Length: 438
Image 1 (cartoon, rainbow, N blue to C red):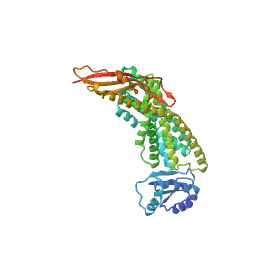
Image 2: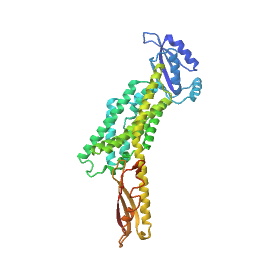
Image 3: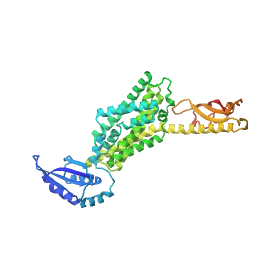
Image 4: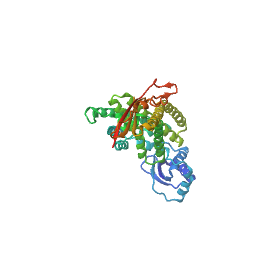
């Protein structure tokens, strides 16, 4: 519930009182003596969904849009008329008023210096966590990331036609991405050159990095969920802190991977993670924009509504087109994941079939690993590594040639695109390691 306080002139008093009486509101009036013009402060409680309709009705009677207005959250209201009013507006969509939304969006965006420092620290911690392969550290970096404010601020600024809020949200998002990449790259270079990480480290073996190198279509679901949850929480007037962690999860770790890729001189790594960052941030923006529009937020001025509608459509179309273009990469990764999965399944079946033969009954399969030519899609199988066990005191039969003769190792089924094979007659090397069983 909300407590609304408005400063009005004495000439408007009768009209405002009549409007509030028609709405069935309890209100109090206090004459303001500190101003040259005779004024009255009127105070009344409202359910949160009723704030915007009542204020719009008052403005239709002539109340100035810039009139001194204070809206605060109230703990309890004891009034029969308020209970009736609450029941009347219970059917409305639960959302805060346009004015509260604007204020909340501004409050979510910290000052420039705070935003800059917190962004640098969050990306710094995330990059360290990635190099340490520590999920706990990476999660910690998301908690301090201030990225939710600019994303939601740009969307709120669009739907209510607050150009200053929109521009600030866009500028801070661009700044955050740029500063994030520079911070991650600088820290990764320093860590590599000063020996903070082992010179023999293979970043492709780090699980926290691997997950950001092969982003697929499911990444869109994560980003869309973050955008919808962020905007919905904002319109409900509840804390957006936890949703901020979810938005940071879609942006901060990939920014760290971009910097690591640049520091290690691997442009394909930086590109893959960079596409993931762009797709995520654009998806967060367009989904939060859609939620705010769906919730009915518009400028209070009728002439501005058309302008906001056009601006919203243009920005939504631009975001959607960009997301579709970038999603081509995600689609390729999804296809690559599917075809490598099929290939590895076939390899496992072929190796199992060989070992099931009577002449190899003494051999037991330990594990199978498929190594690829490139860690970033689209990938080709380079080696199939098979480890088998054999009894102590015996000479294990050689099975490499028989495995190599199988169709899956020749990559003739799983590694075809609709337009033809990725490579001609590609054949993966087969390596078999024999381990003695006690």
